[in-house]
Image (cartoon, rainbow, N blue to C red; front, side, top):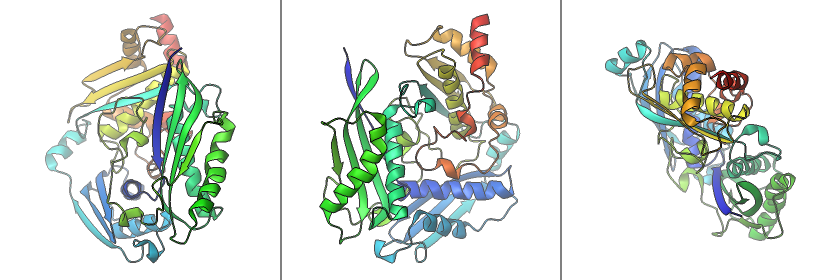
Length: 386
């Protein structure tokens, strides 16, 4: 009997890095709403009283960038000057340039807008749990669910005196690859200075940790639930730490359960393959697992700038595949179009759909086109005929 411990983290929308992801994707969506063929690469930085937005944008439309930034901060909840960061008074600096003509020509020819290695992943390890259809690692799903709930109790006032920043960590014990218990939960919640730590800990334990985790059946008498383990958390958000777009790559994707090509996702239009291919690789991997062709599946794609098709397609089912990985690789190449234009068309990616992905992970939402399992039967048939 083999035991293993796995951990995953998530953060709320008020975390400095996640503020930047949301700003980048809100600007992207605002531009795509007006110009579906725009080219956008948008990064943000936040610090005390300051937002900097920079990148390369080519579009025929006009967008009030400063207005989008302030609206994002307002919607997150940064409206109280006592946090030392609020949407009314912060300075906003915008530094955009047009996309280089050399790159533009390559993309016009339907080539990739950048080079990179991209990974997609799916697993059925959550079978029997309420979220088994997501086909994602259990610790990551739990971490995102806790972070969402932490934000909900702040917004609703169910737990009063909270500010937008927050972090979550979950540690899960596996036995022979099956999650059997949650060993530790850590909740870090930004709060007003006059909050009593014990009262806050009790409220978050019951209304966040237990509310989310009791239905899983994985809580035990030995589960440790820690709230603000370092003590009071009164200085948070951009006043506590600088934030940057793309710094939460693990929680954006699969935690530590899959490889990562290293590229950020937010703020990029779909001609950038490190975004479009991340979604396509997830789509393909999820269909492999949904078809029963493997219990776990990792798909790796690589692209070079200016070329439409991937220069590499690799598949790893970690010994769980019904067919050899090499055979599955050939089948995937026939069932899915991994070219830049093919991915954009298959997933209809020239739409303003990206703001929803910028917090609590890019995967697992039923409404996202890359979460469909509509190619599972085609894959199973192709493997059977092959």
